[in-house]
Length: 524
Image (cartoon, rainbow, N blue to C red; front, side, top):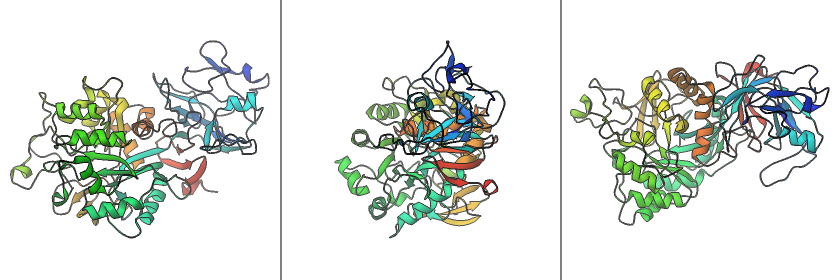
């Protein structure tokens, strides 16, 4: 069992674990052995440390049992404990609450629905362990402790829209697509990403048929971040809002729409998300068919009005692809009027972009009152400082904070310098922090990694650290229905987490409780 825990309180545990009571929010920390109202009794670690619930400043330790998927606990497996961390509790009240942690000393801060508090994190068999069960039922303590040096411990980041990176283009067909996916999976560990959805942009049919079978769902580990399934962005999107997608390969649905989808992609076994434009004919039946298979449908690259978007959500759509980019409402800029074609990600034209109050289009889903009862709409945001003005980030976050999902929309030029690179069938030119379709002013994805997006989002919106971390972890997990295993530090979840300093720079990344990346200066 491994434990990441807060700074040790000397003498704690001398009178027994039930004597060490700390005031805590009801949704945080050990869930049993409660003392008087608002207090939780926490078991001591091997060194007599008492951990508070919530987010944690921790030292890592491990306990002896295993809770791997499909496997019961085994008394011979090591238990890890992480003490000496004062952490974030990126947890929400109720089921699926997520928790994160921050290392160091000092009082913990708390938010209304989430909290930053101090607590040990215990890991066994690749899962996060309830230390009270270990202590009170098994009479066990940690076998190993790891000092996180006063850093923030948060759930691993999940990127549901990444087109490639480090010279790898997921939309380029080859005989060895897997090696490129593996390279990206390995390199994004340094940015705190523990799971991702490789994304294919609009491509010829033969590309889908060749590439998709080579990107299976795969668990993460020392080899790299886990693959949750492929995100197919196109080709069933709007020509007016195609952006960097090649017009020659765009498609509309045929009469037998779902069979057309299968013929286009060549199979959906490895697919997790499909982005389409809901205004296309037969799109509603396609949405229903895809969601019946457990595939997330996202609305994007679209000129749909709000009514059409609401109908799509009623049919099963749950996500919006890069909100504000590639959708109505906008007024045409000069480049469009001159016949160069509208661009989905173009920088703001001299003629101001307008939010049309009589029909807000897909953006209106954030506050719509016509969504099915209990349905939450999620929306992706590219918080790279290029694609979305900080004011727009603030508007979206304040309108619907629980649905915001940070995505990178990273292109193969991620991690490379200025110059020309590919994105599917297009050439991309990188100039500083911006990637354009070569020879145009059309933005073509981002070159910002996920941790950069988290930091920019925090700065631009003024939100809490907990909210910024949730947008990159808990919310994408909820979008994909994985919140019981991913995007949280709740008991029983996969021990995928990232160690961050106070400025949210990544210090180390763990998958299934195993260290998979560490900053050079921190290595022994």
